[in-house]
Image 1 (cartoon, rainbow, N blue to C red):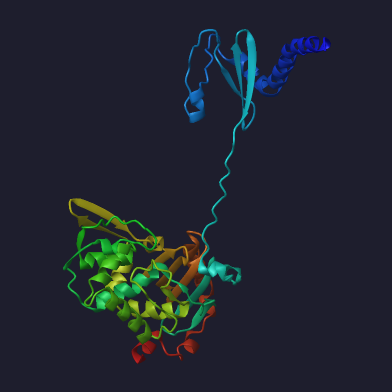
Image 2 (image 1 turned 180 degrees about the vertical axis):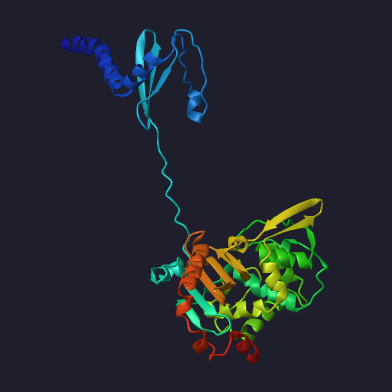
Amino acid sequence: MPDAPSCRVSSQRFLPALRLVAVALCATAFLLPAAQAAKKAPAGKKTEVASESKKRGTASKRSVKGEQADKVVSGGRNVVASIRKRGGKTVVAVQRRSVVRVPEIAARQSFGQLAGLHGTEDALDLKSSVALVIDQDTREVLFSKNDNVVLPIASLTKLMTGLLISEAHLPTDELITITQDDVDTEKGSRSRLTVGSTLPRGELLHLALMSSENRAAHALGRTYPGGLATFVSVMNAKAKMLGMKDTRYVEPTGLSSRNQSSAQDLALLVNAAYADATVRQLSTSPEYQVEVGNRVLQYNTTNRLVKSPDWDIGLQKTGYISEAGQCLVMQARIAGRKLIMVFLDSAGKLGRIADAERVRRWVEANHHMINPAAATRQPSLAAAHVAS
């Protein structure tokens, strides 16, 4: 029993030594780089004090009687060591910061990707999972890839919307006001046409075809005689009349993935829309300005090829939603031939443009191998349209 007190006294004598060992180990592991950096620092530089508020994202300096300024040193990527002297003692505190790792959110896959269509190989190494190139006059298929697959068509929908509005011969100068009904609740897309903006029907049609303005297209369908429901039914009736057997529309903008079609059907639509002078002109317009209230808004084409001197484009429309991927339809004259091109579900923002360029170069390099005389024996797309 008498020995017990002496044991406690003996252990207490070693506490300072143990603390010094701990300080030395921490300093060696975490503070050596800081000490080397301190030698290079200008003399007289004051040491910052890390206060308790640093835990809440704020750092401040403070002077407390009987204490020297704190020194905070980074000892690694997620480790911070602080030195504090109190009452002649040095206290080293090591703190490991918690790291929250946020998993990368995978890009939403298109319907074509989910179906494995991007694994389809082709001679031109196109980025589009669906492609079709047809001679407009002869109906000769120059190139095809998954051309009968039905996929969402995004804003290619607006080509049908524009065609029907043009064919209805509604007053182009009639003022139409954007309402809350025209605001996108499907994808939450933005628009510079705020609720209350008023524009003539003709300008809304221009913006819908050239710049793929969603609120403009929706307002055109909403103000069609009979209302939006009637307009959608007319869209589907027109598709049926054109022989578009795989096509279905549920709204006039293309924001819904339920608007679906195939490359074969879209070639028929491009051919019919090309016959409309208004649609041809507005869809290939490079830029346009509109006055909305006291503002002048500048709009540009969504297809950069329209401004390219290498292209002679008679009609075009682009489209994109995540379910559809990048889409493009065009009528263009290449190597003396009028061609209809359809590209659906293209990978990458510029994939559809690159695919069109690949097709153009391929046609130009091989046009001498094509026998127009043999192809002309087939009925033209225009003839098929009249017959339907």
